[in-house]
Length: 95
Image (cartoon, rainbow, N blue to C red; front, side, top):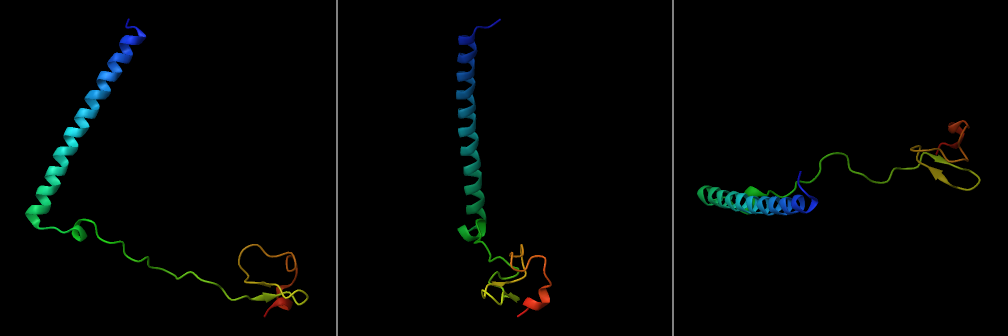
């Protein structure tokens, strides 16, 4: 059975080997990528295109549909209903 110190030494040796292998493989990957870029004459925009604008509905404000006649507070009809309209007939508050 190995001692704690021996196991720590083995771990350090393995971590060094891992770091060296990673550095070596990264170097090879970068050189292959550069070779492909040169071979095909790629530009930065070809490899990393700009992000396109998001498509979909535009977000913005929504017109109010309901108004409290006493305070003038309004509500769009979205989300949780305010206390002044909760549990009541909404047609009487319609704008």
